[in-house]
Amino acid sequence: MGERVYLDHLTVAPILPEVARAMCDSLGQGTASAGSLHREGLRARKIWEAAREKAARFVGARSPEDIVFTPSPNEALNLALLGSVRASEQPRRHIILSATEHPCLRSASLQLAAEGVEVSTLPVNRTGIVDPSILSGMVKPETVLVAIHHANHDTGAIQPIAAISSILDRHTAILLVDATASNGWTAVDVDQLGATLLVLNPAKFHGPTGLGILYRRRGLALRNLVHTGDSQALGDIFPENLPAAAGLSAALEAWENQGEIWRARVRTLQEGIWNRLSQDVEGLHLHGPPLGTLRLPHNLNFSVEQLEGEGLALALDLKGYAVGSGAACIGRKQGMPHNLAAMGVLRDLGKRNLLVGLGVDSQQEQIDAFTDILITTIQRQRTLFS
Image 1 (spheres, rainbow, N blue to C red):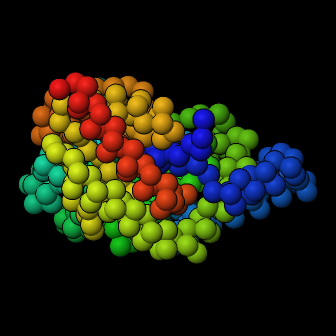
Image 2 (cartoon, one colour):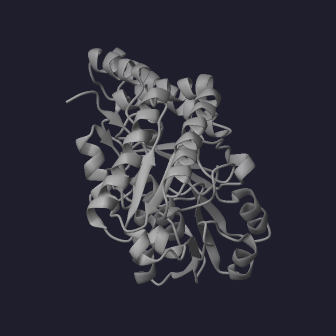
């Protein structure tokens, strides 16, 4: 088999070479607890704190103390939602989630509902974007939290977070922003967004797996989800995942230096694929906003009438191209993605979707060849099944 081309970056993006080197260097120096006072412990603490400092700078936090590391992004999202709502002292509690939030937040909200918290769903339009004016009418005096992703993990739809934050300035509700899909691929600044809580996923921007990043505005109380001792920290990674922390530092530094170039180049590749498909394929449906400022530059989610997305993905895999189908956050589970259902996409069409996720490692010649193969595969399957 020839060269494999990975185009499933919406699920996990392969780590950058400099990230791999940093992780290997950390492993080569041995392991130790960052809480220990010996020389090895102090070295571990230096790696851990350097990663927190870089993460704080990356999101515009005022202090590294505003950054909490967790063993995974899902745990960071759970800690943000469950921890903040459970810590609220309001006798009646109400939360609002957009209809296209990540499944882990949707599941956690069901747990809160079982605890007596009122949960409301903010609808999205046909491109997957919320209307701040609708949210304004949903906020109540007892609303303690609003959860809106910065950009959707499946459709790449970028939400009007700053406008939402302006609405919440008139209320006491806090704003939880899931930036796990957008981190790196668009600017993420907690002050500009007005986020009280914000979560990043390094594995989505060519950083390490095994680490979630939670920004918590200073002074906000969170109730921990994990209990291991009197001196536990929020998130409580013990022993600390030092290779992941070292890799995170390298990834964030790379994005600070080259992010603007990478985003522009990948945007060009995205536009090239879609322009070719639009010209040569009939019955093509893009899910989410049109390409441009309202969509992440590395995301394509579309369906082709009369063809199964899973069948196309398997055919492309045999030809050396890894793409996704269904929902990026669910993996092998096939069916109608809840995001597309919330957008009003017809079930027959939504189940046929294909996910193409570009990355900084995507090359023009690879993408040109992939687009040729994709168009040929679509035409061949239509001939076979017509």
